[in-house]
Amino acid sequence: MTTVAACFSRGFFQPAVYLDMMKAISFYDTKPYDRDAMLAAEGAAQMEWRFHEFRLTAETAATAAGCDAVCVFVNDRLDRGCLTRLAEAGVRHVALRCAGFNQVDLAAARELGVTVTRVPAYSPHAVAEHAVALLLTLNRKIHRAHNRVREFNFSLAGLVGFDLHGKTAGIIGTGKIGRCTAQIFRGFGCEVLAYDPFPQHDWAAGHAVRYTRFDEVLEKADILSLHLPLTPETHHLLNADTLARMKSGAYLLNTSRGKLVDTTALIGCLKGGQLGGVALDVYEEEEGIFFEDHSERGLLEDDELSRLLTFPNVLVTSHQAFLTREALGEIARVTVTNLRSHLDGLPLLEGTVL
Ligand code: NAI
Image 1 (tube, rainbow, N blue to C red):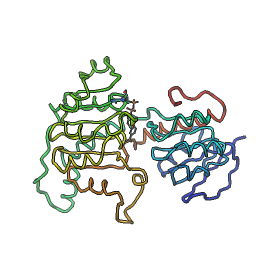
Image 2 (image 1 turned 120 degrees about the horizontal axis):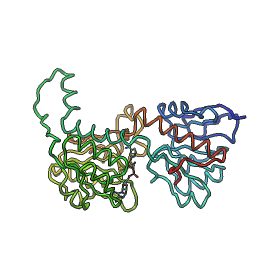
Image 3 (image 1 turned 90 degrees about the horizontal axis):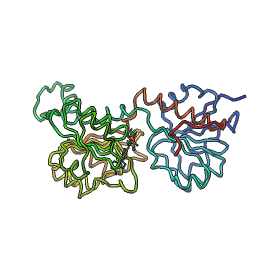
Image 4 (image 1 turned 180 degrees about the horizontal axis):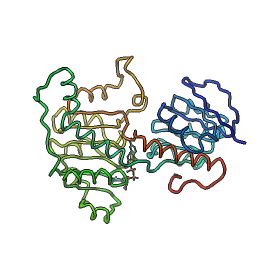
């Protein structure tokens, strides 16, 4: 018989009583919306959930003792030290409830015999639509207009934007999200240039998207949108040199991973007035800042993020591009299916094992 239990801890190493230790899932960086979505997924009630608000790191890995699996998100840190402690604690499965997997030392996981799964595609539309929402907000200054009218200031001074129609959108990375984003831009009447080391020529022909060299996309795009994974090769893809080669007045959108952009160089570029606008859903040092409410403290210790927030042409959201009902439901479905299958020794969903 399987057991049903869910408990929740805020601090580190909070003791809890579990009904069936060997069917337990230790769940980290829990937020109310992902806990609700996870518990609503089919099959979730047949497992025991240990929800923790804190993140999983080598220091907190002991909290997974007695669990078969851990379920983690983008800012948990599964380095060799953490994975070693998990393996020692008996954990055999790391279920990432996200697509990106740069936070996991996969080589170490393999050596330790820990299976790592992810949710490769939950809703590429959610992320693509958020990228475009950020651009529209920034370009048409909706955030500023909204604040103004609420104070009965109906002036239009300083709110001039530009038509997207006829502009060139550059897409770096034409995987699931990049393709959706490109298609939205085509819908606006933009010319779309794309770069990907593994181009999808049939798709491009079908949507009048033109693949070209990275340099050409960088230099011709009025809007440059990043949709590629973070790897050692793509770390700081946008740096002082590449940012300087972007078109004057261009807009940069990053909904992929913060470390794709060198923040110091980006701030220099913004100070020089070269870029028209920058929309970031991800930030190089977001770990420990994003997903949390720091408003009561009233200060940010991260000087570069603080500086970014002072530019009127910079818009930052807190890694929320994935946050739609559809995406949360799909993340929960795939994660719970894999967690159950792993426990029962059944095959895992195709394309989810790293
Ligand atoms: P995907 O795996 O479908 O596509 C990634 C594409 O990037 C592939 O076509 C690949 O060939 C390409 N690529 C790899 N190296 C490249 C390079 N050096 N230059 C250009 N292209 C390169 O991934 P998907 O689902 O489209 O996700 C893209 C990224 O979006 C993820 O890696 C993740 O970091 C981010 N993401 C962000 C979310 C958010 O909430 N902000 C949510 C989901 C994903």
